[in-house]
Length: 303
Image (cartoon, rainbow, N blue to C red; front, side, top):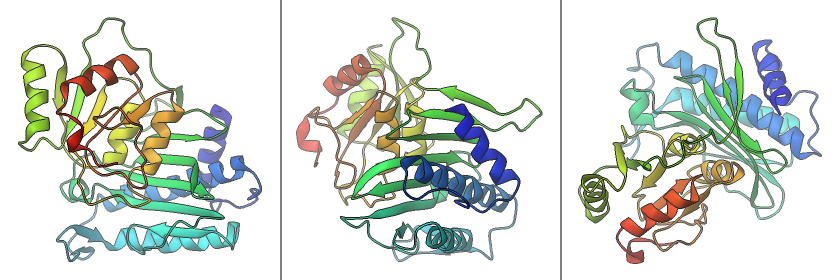
């Protein structure tokens, strides 16, 4: 699989338009398009981190931030997608759109974790997910701050592409990473606001049942992608407002393609397009069940 990653990276660095010369008739063609779109978008987000935000920052009706960079990325992706497959649909965080029941669609969030982007922290992500007949067939979650890219398709398991910044070279890593046997499970908790869920995790930490990392916030997609490494189990208190195609579907797909699972506190697999309430994600099934047993019971979940 490393050849696919490195070939897409080479094309991106040479300025080849995403999807040019690729086949829309194959899953590999869509996987490559997804990766190339994410690489192009991630480069723009990375560049935007180093300019003054005043002119490009605005706020939505719910007071969440948005940037002109995000809108420009979605408009550019729409053009690339039209050239690759004129029948496909783009569903964007900023420009909207729905994933159809039949046919191909790409769901994108150019900057997942926009508050983190505004605050110049590294917990941000560019998330690109390909759907065919309303099912995910490929996904990419890229961190523009760290140069780490996690991706997979229904034909290829999850892989990490690390972009070299300081002459260390690019690196491709199969996931999950090897975990030390017998190690106490480490839990990434997001968000850490007061409540029954947070209190249960704090008590488990005090009892030394688990180790708890207080998440810096930011992108849930990036935390899900990080969970594919196997270094921690991810717990998110997720809102009861429901999910959009660009929210959880790509990250959940990556965890499962790495041999892991994403469940609710009742132990049921999360349905990422309709999920409400808390969820638990990771590649260590024992740690998943241990964390699930610690959390308050299923009434907190709405799946």
